[in-house]
Image 1 (tube, rainbow, N blue to C red):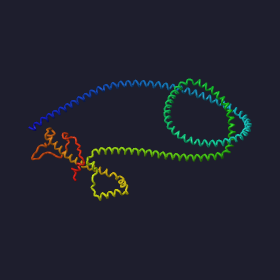
Image 2 (image 1 turned 45 degrees about the horizontal axis):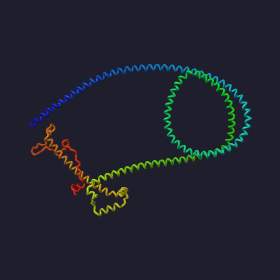
Image 3 (image 1 turned 45 degrees about the vertical axis):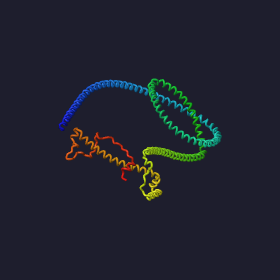
Length: 466
């Protein structure tokens, strides 16, 4: 009877599963046919859109071809006009070259006549120049002395201004770079605009080139007359320059030795100045490196102090929280009694007073004041180990109880999974099918793990062996 009652649910479940499979298959078939219909409709719409786009594209291409042909024709006409203008310009330039050669021949003849007259005037003016030379030499000596004094004063002022000017240039350079970038970008836009305007103006100005050529020809005649007058003046000035050059050569021989001495002194001063400048730059770099190093170290020290301060505040907060959770016994006796004898304690005390020679021993000697802290820490650590040991025992016991509970629930419940397995409630020949060491993961038995809190003092007093 027991086996008969269990067959009906399995038959119904088989029918239900077959019906579900049939419905899924029909639903998938309908979805597949519906997708095919939608694909055909969408493909028709896309074909129509492609035909419309192809027609519009062909119209646009024809329009672009027509514009390209018209532009090519305009370009060819412009090139022909440019070739005609270039030929006429070259012819005009050749005629101007011929006219200029004739005028130069006439000017050569005129130059030779004027040269004879200027030589006569040169002899008369030479006597006057020799007299003036003596007077001017005295004046030059006075001027050179004053110039030396002014040069020394200006050199000192120039050095001071040079140093200040260098600093100002460095500051202005960074500002001007940024400004120049902005100005160059704006000028680039302006030049592009002017280039386009110039191109338009050139195309419009080719019509009026004849009138401009006549105007330039008239100006050229006027300029030729001015050239004649200027050539005379140039000849006079060249003679004066040759005379002055001779005077300068005579004066240069006299002042050469003095100039050599001044140059040597100046080079020495410049070398000394460069040495001082190099030393000053090195000193600046060294001081700047020291300043940067000091700022970096100060920043790192401030960060480290801030981190240590935060760490100390956290430790103090944790200490306050732990102080609230202390028992009465821990408040009265915060440190455990030492298990060492009096002699051993005396030996430890003398060893702590002695200074070690190794670095690790010296560091431990510096932290001897933390002994009481480590005692409390060790006590808490022992309490934690005792609680962990008790927790492991309770977890194992709880696991065994939940295993038994699951097996009991499996024995009293009726379903296909349980029937296909061995029933733990059957007892044959005083033997059971219960497996006591099987881990349990059934949600019927699982529950949230309770966090049991036990005082460390209680564990030490009642649980741990004395």
